[in-house]
Length: 445
Ligand SMILES: Nc1ncnc2c1ncn2[C@@H]1O[C@H](COP(=O)(O)OP(=O)(O)OP(=O)(O)O)[C@@H](O)[C@H]1O
Ligand SMILES: [Mg+2]
Image 1 (cartoon, rainbow, N blue to C red):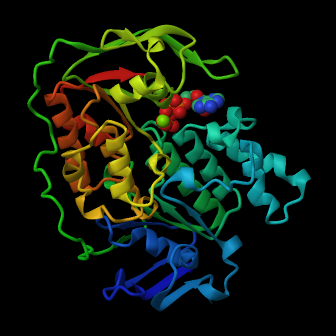
Image 2 (image 1 turned 60 degrees about the horizontal axis):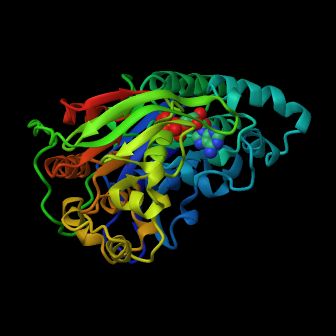
Image 3 (image 1 turned 45 degrees about the horizontal axis):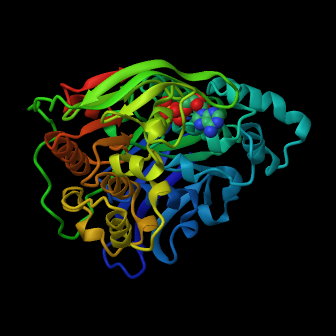
């Protein structure tokens, strides 16, 4: 037996009701478990508790029950070498100490005392497995979301912790690679006799059976919020307004190494149009978003926004007309409360107005933005992109981390934009988005 968990009950101090209670299961060598439960049910906290990392996230708590790893109480285990975690948002997991992908991969080996001469074959093997060899020389801060997730997988698996908690590991991974990723995890567990527990949204899981399934109950501490819209499918297609909002002509762009990321891309969007941008990790979806928002500049081609080339517009004009919600939800946030974030957007001339309630942010107004869940941060990022003067709304993976209710809210918000004659571009790996917008145009990169 690698992991034995008995009657686990966690209470965060100051909060009367337990986060989870009565959790019991075990994992044998090579086994993979799955933890399910609605948003707020405590999946992440369970994983962090099992790894013995709760103290890194929570100030004080009360934990009853037993966690044994390799026959020892978790407190007695060398958690640094025997447990590992892949965090929900990969953008928050970089060591922060290493510049290149190669050094980021060497770091966990270094810190476990592996001799430098023994590292190259290990790094090579895992880089190969995750298809990231071409990225070894790259600055880690320039990777796409999915590329970064693969690097973090390689770094975590190569040290073979006996228990690994994978928190929403498929969120950034393109649909084509998800089954392969699951195969790699299973193969790794079999080979090393380790165990792992996955928390993941069911719609992102490849078809598979788990050795153990743990279900956590609903969280009843939610405060009242604006009613959630019923629609999760935008069935009715409003006619486009006929006004061309965005015209992209022969757009080409590459970063410093001159390999083109986008090559002669052309499309246009009218008011009321919704388009979905899809493509494998690293195919240039986020790059396209940054070009359209004027953050990057094309090598050639033209971007025309409501009849004007954006090269003729200054940053303020572009910002007023184009709303961008970023893939990493933390990057938007710079104020002390959600209310202040929304006020700032208003002060800069774009009032999120009704989208605050629609996106379920009304009950979060006094919260610190960085303390929000990933799902809430995403909805806040979307509200900040939803100002009333914006003509083009670009949403980079907006539905990541959203449960059914959060998803419905986002679908409704997108529908409102389209009905009001804006154009909406949604970058997504989420199969639910394709079902929700059956009439949307598809831009494949
Ligand atoms: N600042 C940068 N310097 C060099 N290369 C970069 C930079 N930013 C992105 N890239 C590379 O450009 C390519 C496209 O990146 P982009 O982030 O647009 O991909 P993506 O389609 O959004 O991927 P994902 O699905 O993983 O989010 C990737 O190979 C990425 O590594
Ligand atoms: Mg991206």
